[in-house]
Image (cartoon, rainbow, N blue to C red; front, top):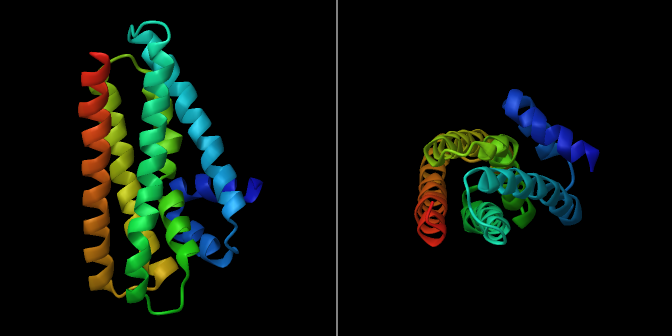
Length: 184
């Protein structure tokens, strides 16, 4: 478990080396679930503090933070499901675990940079969310050839499709739905 956390944080600093190590490790759904759960707890904690500081009233701040966390985790899991059919374009034999590893490890910037969700300004939080999402898409682009072994043209097309879905989905839900629902 600690190895997963170290690999996730190493992915932020040295992505090429981290993707090689992630590719070499065996797929463990339980370890990935714990990895995602730890980071999701941090996202919830930071977003709760940010919601309190931005003036959302008492039980609603926790609901807003929970919805934000569920949107981020659901988005990452959806990306894993979206990547599964693209496994047919892989050069070597892969399974669905490769797609989930790629999606959940690529989402590490969303988890790690959630510390900026403490900032009470909605625009600043949106800027850091989009920045971390951009970095997550870059990590996805770097991870596709390592985990799937895709050709360069397939890597570009797959990463553009998946990144577009990821960005539109998270922006739609976190920047349009949540502010309307909670009058931010």
